[in-house]
Length: 295
Image (cartoon, rainbow, N blue to C red; front, side):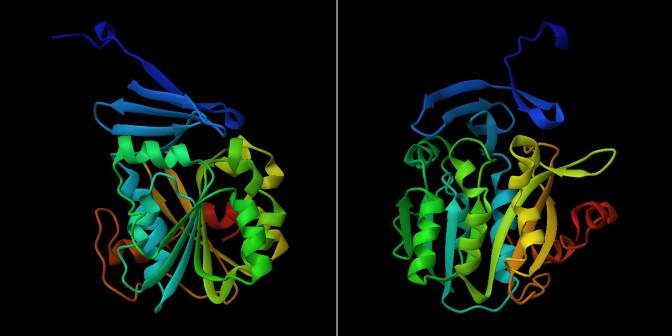
């Protein structure tokens, strides 16, 4: 029997500098390149399969991507009766958000704005998540989301759901972690619409921290901007787990004008992770959420 100490390991570490935290995976690198925007790497792990990282941070794995993508999409889409829904995906280059949105026939329009075309291409090649960019409802725009949102606001374009599927505030995503960006997306949501944001959460001895805070400027945390500035007056949240994201504790945040309660699904749907009971239960928040995060 081989002892653990005798097994050859090739450890890859994801490090969260602000909290001096790391988790490690023993895996083989399949691809690495520096795009004009960021370092893109694809790894293979014996248990978790193909894993996409951007600038050293895990974005998606074959094993658990559905946990994130299903909860990000089906809660806001199935939490309210809608017809001819329009959806804007900010980021989402791995294709998972798009795949889940397109499952619903009441979605009539999807715009996806991704700055790095190579993330789309490499995700297709290595991850096979299968967001269907050929669906006639879909418009894929390769470009800067901050610039797109500014133009959408100026033209009066509005969406029923905006999903912020962002990496942390380093590299190309830094341009969207601003109050101006929040002002623009707030102006692009319909009166009955909702914006979906998300982040990993760490519980410290003094308070809870968003990964956005720990990776970037503490003033560029989208949740705190929305809470303080009241750009959309209602901020609520629900929770889930994503096993390969730092700390596994994961929060989803809903920004809206009307404060509609999305906790009760209006239509049946069952995914690999999502179901009606889980939809409802995800809104049961721990006391520390309410105390530390303002919910």
